[in-house]
Length: 243
Image 1 (spheres, rainbow, N blue to C red):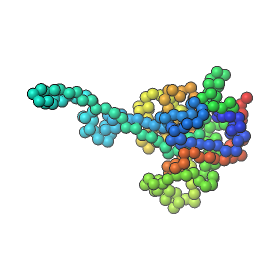
Image 2: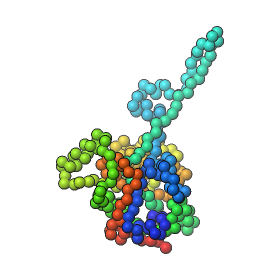
Image 3: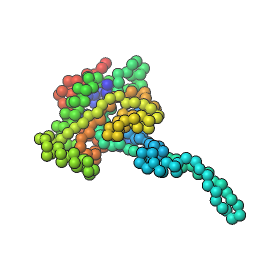
Image 4: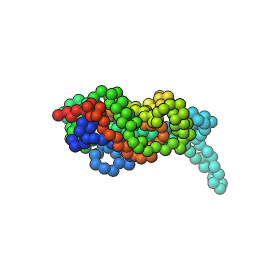
């Protein structure tokens, strides 16, 4: 389900707007539930970080005592070392929708959260994801991305040398998981897929939104926070305004 003003319903409007996690972190427009300063932000404890990359440094963490001399007086100090490493993921554009509300009161709450008086059904998620990816693949000019990272350059070179394709588009989709214990959840995801998983985890303060997300990405890192895609004929045929 997509909540929006009726004039912007995917069933009738001719384009869709997607935003990067950075866009939602700094969002200052209307809609109380749109801004999230922790959007696609993941914190890992120093103990976990050093345990993986510098095990010897783990011994520095925690509370330990040290005796120092201050003139003729010996002082014992307790020193606590703790902290976390913060990751901000910004590798895709997000199209945010919701699961079907379970009651009239929940629908009213979700409409308020997303500042939309119209509810539009989008059809089967996998079919909509395919059409969303197809729109991103065909739009010209293509999505604005940077390929400064070596692995992006390698991916792009391999694509151009081995296939006739001009652009690859990936679409990950699924329900958002709401938790205040992000680290244990993200750490359980294999490292190769971790960046893709982070945008699908949010704090429990947003649990009432019951989001279902589509994350669109291509080779490179987005340099524009907003991506406008045409609502194709096939996409519009999937959408239906729910009274």
